[in-house]
Image 1 (cartoon, rainbow, N blue to C red):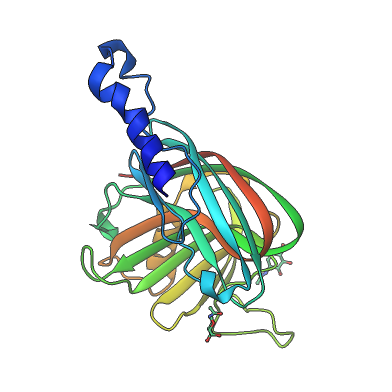
Image 2: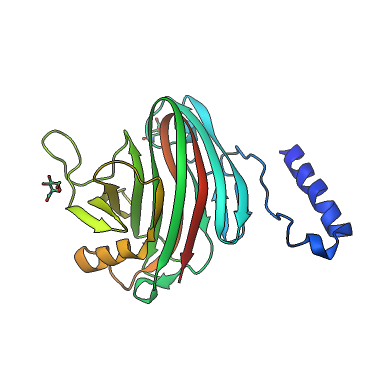
Length: 258
Ligand SMILES: *[C@@H]1O[C@H](CO)[C@@H](O)[C@H](O)[C@H]1NC(C)=O
Ligand SMILES: *[C@@H]1O[C@H](CO)[C@@H](O)[C@H](O)[C@H]1NC(C)=O
């Protein structure tokens, strides 16, 4: 902790005292060091990277570490290395949180352009997803009422669901929905605090996703129970990690609300 702060000060010092004007544009004013603290954050452009290891105490051992690789315009490259053993439930949701243009009413959102190219290496079997996580509220900046998840990959995990098939698998409330060039099943249920809508791919993974996340919200307002008067309070993307060992490398991550 101390050494990280010291490094940041040392990197800043020449900039503050001696940076020639022509160097300012090239200089990455972003912290690219590795962070492993349970609640560490790194702000980069319009994003904050949250380590968010909220279930850490439920693991017998393990941690999530992440670093920003680079920031260019709205495009963030980042890496997340995690390992979790034991316990139950999600241990971490290390994610990139958008800080710009939130708290619009759903009816006022034109689009949410998103691009996410990622790859993952694992050792052994893992339980995790790679997913966007959005929240809505009845007021701007208010408490969450609805959670909307868009899973780009499901590794032996499963969505929250209020209904199950006789074989114990979660039962979708809608199937084979075409949005953003992929086919999805929609699951619905409660996490105790929020209604949770989860879009899961009918097959495979989307490792170079590019699309308008607002189309998922529009589907929910036109075909499900989500109200257009709700406000979009949160847009995040990351991996909910339950168990195993993985390195998630995101070469492109960009979300912009208009
Ligand atoms: C975390 O552990 C506690 C205590 O064992 C348990 O009650 C709780 O359900 C666990 N949470 C999850 C998400 O597994
Ligand atoms: C979804 O599409 C698959 C493949 O075409 C098909 O087998 C399945 O019956 C469809 N599910 C529903 C509920 O329509």
